[in-house]
Image (cartoon, rainbow, N blue to C red; front, side, top):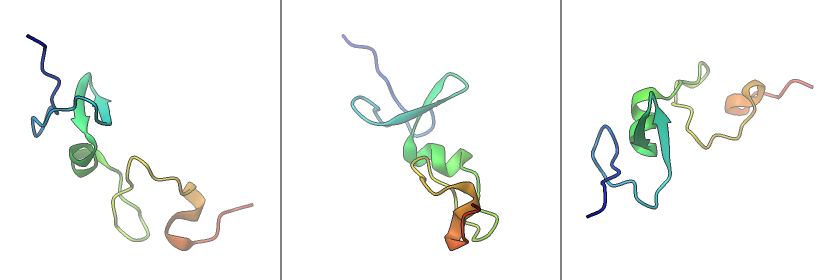
Length: 65
C-alpha cells in the first residue's frame, strides 16, 4: 500500500500535481493561493504562485528602469 500525499487543507491528492510546501505541509495551488497569497495593493487581487510580473510593473503601471 502506498502512502497518501494530499493537500493539507482540502485533502485532494497531490500525486503528479504542482504543490507548495508551507511549514512542512503540502498545499494544492488553489488552496495555497486562497489561504496565503499576498494581495496587490493597486487592484486588490491575489498575487498567484505563477505571477511573472515584476513588482514595479503590477497592474499595468510602468516598471522602473
